[in-house]
Image (cartoon, rainbow, N blue to C red; front, side):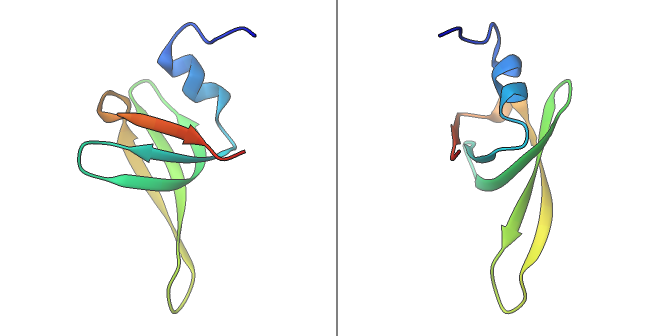
Length: 70
């Protein structure tokens, strides 16, 4: 099995998958939609009275852990 050369390559391979991302101060779960030069964007579903989605932007440098659910 070949492993990605960089962390950014790993993130790019997860685009379109459901992921959990943790930082020092937050936890985000959702569909990874974009990996830019220094940030990732995911769409998170907020469950409540009415389901809604929100776009979460996380700097790559602040990511401590990422897990793919698919």
